[in-house]
Image 1 (cartoon, rainbow, N blue to C red):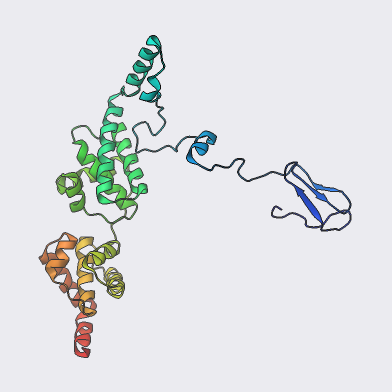
Image 2 (tube, one colour; image 1 turned 30 degrees about the vertical axis):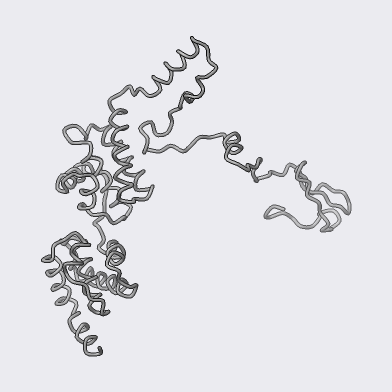
Length: 307
């Protein structure tokens, strides 16, 4: 019985109602009044018990996606196994159609087919979610259509698009990680990223240091209390304007280093620097700034005395 249905018969006031799903009617069993007709069944009109049945009943294809050069709208002309049983002329025609099926006519399509394969490889290496991969493919497609790839290597534009997508979806990935995955210098990736975002008018908010805390804490095997304290330190640092003009990875690593000292989980500056992809000097400088500006040195001394 659908939502909002009158549960009493308007004629006799009875509640002994019968729902006839085949005819789409609701009938009062006491007086025989048809309370409602032409009911709409919002349920599934068919059931599938295996993948073959589901495939036969399906009326639509896969959704459009920028991760394929034809946005998933292309069709495939048969399989190689379908050639058996065909005569001479039909076989030649079938093979000719399959050959043209895989031929790509325009330069943009050829570029996209190669670049999107590279994008999927890098995305898989960095374990990026599908939403980031889709956004990066969209950015790269727009860049190709605007002619922004000319004069630049395909790999650098792919890496720049992936970095822009990570920033837009707040997925913490550094330029060093993208450089390692794509074998492109991080300075080149940074230049391409800035060029593409500027030309396409893509708005990217500044990276938040707190986004990196969970990844760094997991790699350093720090507990939840240390991670939570590091986020509190970063919040206080942002209010004190200590994060402006400084690399987010460096200050996030320094906050974790301070939090680990407070909770007695000692990690060396070298260990933290290697995980964050920064130098020990950066960790040391950010660490000193946090201690001086946020008065964390007193808190560390109190905890050491208790121990």
